[in-house]
Image (cartoon, rainbow over all chains, first blue to last red; front, side, top):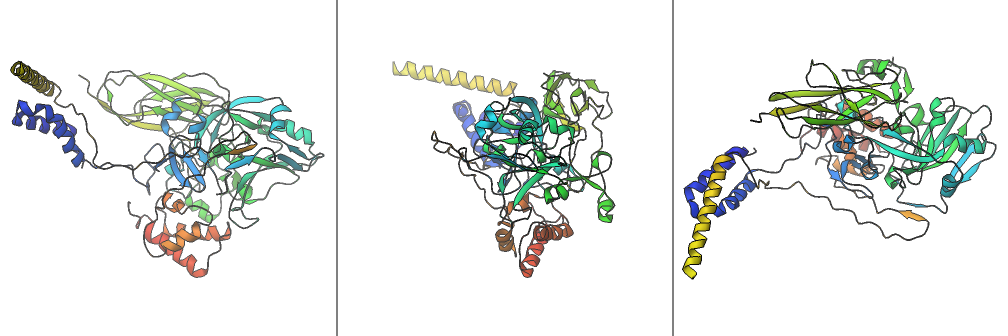
Length: 430
Length: 141
């Protein structure tokens, strides 16, 4: 359909020659008019499948929301927005580009801080009602950078495809979070002996009947999980108030864990003396108790798969640039950039390859923002000859976890972490 | 006076022409000013709300975007019932899914999430989804 660019120009040149020197000044004008009539604007398809989504991001329209730059729209009610690829060339994701994912349509547009309180109750000696100012002033501020990634990030890569939010790779981000240590808040309330979990609930509400998961979103954390001591109730994100769509006034930060536990607009903390059996813990967000959480549709159908609540994020790394949208001239050094992270500890190595069977070369790691943050990486790459290249990146964390070549499959569309590749066309340059 | 100006213009035009010709010959594959005939649509920026120095923290209303459901029998049922809890565009976001998966999804909305459909509505929504959103039936929009 598209007019071949060089042919178009050649034709206009011939036309110009035919008309003669007097019309030369108008050559450009005629050319523009001609090409405008020939090439309709094209967009990415409106959906992908049944094959895997071949695009880095999801394929929705770009949409603007309060406090946000244009992001990739998955759904508008509740709001689900994906961060475009280019933002992952840096270790910190700006607040206004940070992805958005809600479960229920009742998302706050207004929060009144004179009445808003963080309530701590359940199996405690002294129930608390803390104001925003209490959280800021009565606790020693703790700050660290941490990656927030949706459990279903990259779900659109699954084969066979599974229902759910069809995220590309952009349902993730890394911010500097500042807040009060969750443990200190609970110590102030005094947990009774025999407590096993803490249940978290925010302002999010749905139109479903009372007691149904379509009405309320609740998650729980085990008290004996080591992550418990790392959690903070964050009131600042990259040094600013949280955007409303990312959980103003406060959200729980659970570093290393998937975002499902990072409850937004946190209002209620309940100490439980038995494990939470609400839908969002007992049924949803569960992964197979198998290596890498992978199984098959047949085993799921047979009902032989034991499922566990999802928890830590497997090691991942991404190429932000070059993104394959344009050619690279041969013999020119280009800087390949991206980020890596793991929910199991800090990134110790990022490797780069430029062919399917090629050797891996170690990339240069950027500033260390702590074990839960994105680790930016870069490497200089000089493709010697024109042709098609498949470039790849692979990360290793401090526990020795390395990204594999194989994908996973599970019914929820969780835990995707295979090695990412990008097809790059290198052109002749002389 | 007039004539010399006209002459000068002619010389200038010829020189420019020659330059463009030369440029055309050298950069034969150069392309400039290539715009498409259609457009991909634009999305308006939401206006910020008026802020006051009180304790209410507000953002503007969250924008909605047009429904993208395929036309056909059952479309109204899907649009109306699904819309109770979420945008019907949750349907169009999905990849093509097998007929049995759509049946299971509608049942999940009722049994797990508490949606209440009359029996005939359940059947109409399931057949609508199967008629437009399986690998065999889904069409590009």
